[in-house]
Image 1: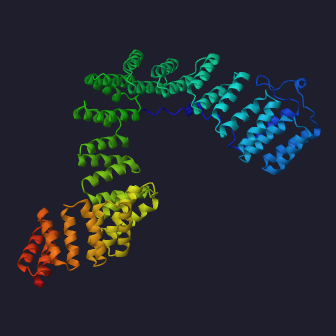
Image 2: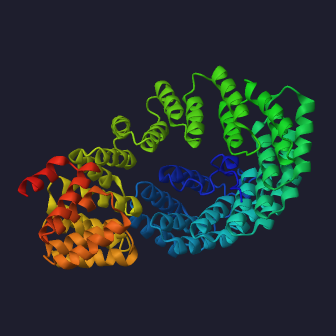
Length: 592
């Protein structure tokens, strides 16, 4: 299911959590409230926060209490919290009905993260002064932090009843109901807002999202349509409508948008874009292609939207390569200054395995934007597909000059260095890659450890090599190739031969007919001087592969030590003919 568009922009960072994040600002608010109360202006409702002195009852408030409250407020402001609490408790003892003391205590408990105590204190303040809007707002804030979203929503509903002109209360109540998994209550609050203040596109879009969550797709589209009619120039509403209609298979609704947009401006690229979506939905390919051309050629259509259209076209089996190239030509004519133009063309050729063309376009993209990490990735992978490891290494290092903390580029470079047998650079790059990887990247870490095991072996650092083999096998106990390589390297160093034999037996249980594995077992047996068994296994390897130069060389060695010298020489000569280094084998022939 499509992820719904983030609705946070509707609130425009409305202070659902008020300004609790900014304690200094919070206390300025408290101080203002306190001055109102202590100057004889207790707040009764939002409609008139400056009511006359005749309606205010301080409930035995004295000048002493006023001074104490001001002193407590000052201590809260300057973070002398213990002193503030002590003063407020004195005030409570002098006048248990002093609501301001409880309000300030709720602020104290908020600062020390004792939210239950904060909630108790603010409820005491509200019981003493139930119409005080500041107290109700503070209560809602505390309930949100306690994750009592339903109770917070109900507080906002109380605030709405007391002051229905504050639009923020409606939005906050709707969001709290939504967080409490009560979407229908959210809709009721938003409908109440519309009844009081008339239609607002922010409200309509919010209701669209809630209806979408409830899978009430017709109602969701109706809300979006109201938004479009209210603000026809808002492109985002129209794009969302088109996308949602396609996703939910609402073809009639999509046709309504197309007809409306075409009537407003038949040459509009976005109208053509919506029309192409409609024709795609009803499988009219030629009509869809016609509209796509209009959309791509219209300079009013945003470049990113054009890219999205082309990407969608690449996945459409009804669109042929000729038309795709036509779209590319238009894109290059209009936007040859955009790196993304050549990136998307390069991706297309890469998907077709036309690697030279893809590399050409990725390089063009880098000429326009030499710092685009996605372009480097695409280019590096294209070279990897071509087995062009020198170029792969070059562009990996170039990418690292811009992105020295991206492990992926270290890995690409290390892999390329391994493939061209530059093992020292391979080790350097792969160790750097490990420095930037977290434990979540298990598969990549395992691959790097395996490469390092082999690279350290090739550089003669056998202890490190074998340590990495142990790590890799622990992480990949069913990796037969890993066990074979480790076993073979142990045999080559004439060390831990019984361990090597166990490893290759485990590998053969996983892949019993693999000629390389069979050859490794023959070689280990040869190293153990079990020549008769070694011959049985090397003969078996030759049945599966009689042209591999390593297998042929090992066969020569085993046969030679069994005094089957003519056959041994034949095997060695075949090894040379199949690519084995002549010097290595000729030394054995000279010994003969």
